[in-house]
Length: 237
Image (spheres, rainbow, N blue to C red):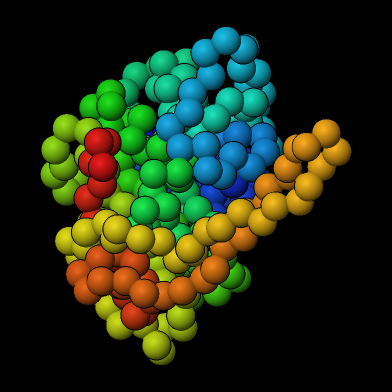
């Protein structure tokens, strides 16, 4: 039986993690190792100079072995392989992230970072994401199909599959856009708003301006147009 390690960056109680574990059960023995809090935008960060606490976790999917940890998503993959599964799993799944991971935002994504950690040690990995919404129709209808299609589809060294599900109804869903390249831009053009502080300091707050301008053939354009985006991400991208 295949051994499947699952993590995320939204935390052990995230709905996307639970839905992913439930779908993964049909493909093998599932181990969940996830942070005990949200770890978004941590990219590929790992913990070096602090201990990592790990506890068994109550998990609402029967038959799934689960642990929560103070580590990062990339940590979860590192010690999940070495100390939990205790052998290389056949597959690492990261997600389902609450928020798209496409375009230039990929460089910040801890969902993608965790999958790339698996790729670093030669484990086949898939990162999966959806929009910031409660609309899961397309994700839930196609999740198992995408896992089945990509679980053994060849990848090069230090490569992962990156899947983004669109925020639309099944009626408006256009299909699966494969071989998408990573867009050079993101959904938000950021600026920092400044507030003066005593002593000459400044407090900065990021302010993102949303847009949907993306080139044809990219992951960003695919989800905006109502497609599932599937593409390869390189560890050096």
